[in-house]
Image (cartoon, rainbow, N blue to C red; front, side):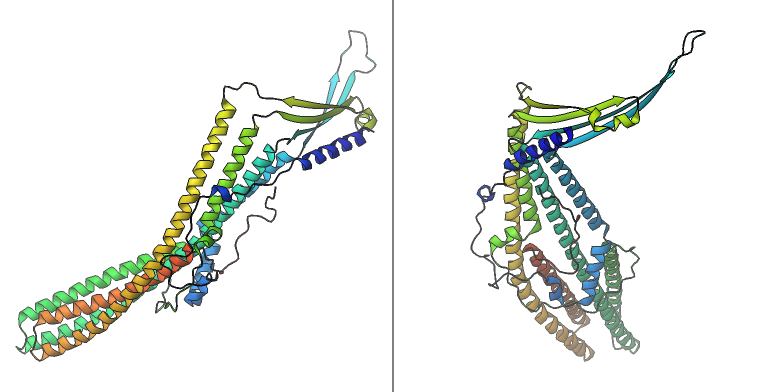
Amino acid sequence: MKTRLVRALVAALLVAFCGCRTTSEDRSDLLELEAPDAFAAQSAPGALSDQGWLAGFNDPLLNSLVAEAQKNNPNLRAAAARMKAVAANARAATAGLFPTASASGGASRNKRSGAAGFRLTNPVNDSFTLNAGIAWELDLWGKIQNRARAASADFEAATADFQAARLSLAANTVAAWFNTVEAELQVRLSEQTLKSFQTNLMVIEQGFDRGVNPALDVRLTRANVANARASLRQREQQRDTAIRTLEAILGRYPANRLVAANNLPRIARDIPVGLPSQLLNRRPDILAAERRLAAADERFKAARKDLLPTISLSANGGTQSSELKDVLDPDSNVWGFAANLAQPIFQGGRLRAIAKSNQAAVEAAIADYTQIALTAFREVETTLAAGQFLRERESALQAAAEESAQAEQLAWSQYQRGLVDIITVLESQRRSFNARSSLILISNQRLQNRLNLHLAIGGDFDALPPVDADDDSPTP
């Protein structure tokens, strides 16, 4: 009988709880953002680019490096662990929506001694106890649900943060790979330049031995060779740093064993970036900021409801007997039921201060969301504009490199015929080297800018599936 009564009580509370559930409000009215109809610097109007930007670089080795970094990078593993912790906290927050049950039991034995000359019939006294209780705070105003929804929004924000970290790691891997390849190409250019200068020096020294070339030409050419050797060592150091940096990103020991590719990939075409308003639903950092705003708003609602009365129900029962079998007999249990009403009266303004603090947190979250969105718009506009500038610079440097190479050959030919002095030759060599080096640098900068554009528009890379925090994520 008592068992059926307890079940009926739990069923009644479930009906009351379901009738009090509310849905989260639409937050669009709080987001005061004015996005234009199109990006001002957009050069390729059209539908939004697909998500698999990594394949656009057409480098299978790069794909494998990104996959390795996603698997082994310690920072990403730490981010995944933090996301799992937030998921666990969110599930814990939903526990307040349900009743709590507890049980306790005990056993004791007392031994009594009789007076001198007397023997007790039962000198040993055993005692067994069993107690149980159920307690539930009715979520009459929905504040427990507010806090559960806030925790769920925190988890969604943490998930977006992890996605942002995952994208950032992929971008850092790609950027480090491009820097490594550029450093390798700069080393090869310096090696070729040094070899060319050494050949010229040998010719000039032979002319000096025959009395054709003056000692000044020999000295200046030797200085040129020495500078080229120093430049080569500097480029080798930069390559060493680039390789070790990439190895650390991949989770490897930075042993300088990675071998760079022979060429940088080429940018084939512009990519459509879609509409500015689409960033709000694509970029993980914007999604995380919006979810934090939602969480702050839910906590503010809960803090205001803390000023309202609370109703809680409880049921307690138990038994005590000298026989263990009697403790387990349901007919020997004694149950009691209670309902409590509590209304905060005076706490020195603590609850109102907490509510105002949470209201300020909402205002700060709105400002943070606005700033992050504006930063996203700026990044897209900047990278779009930079792409055009870099493309024009690369075209000019390509022409400069070709002309400088022809000028170098012409100056050396005329020097050998005595038409120009050594200074003209050295200057033409310097300009040719700088032009070719700048061309390698600008090619890398264009790739880095394209990479930044993919991130700015919130694109994914599709190298590995995302890491889930857990299969049973909270859904209060």
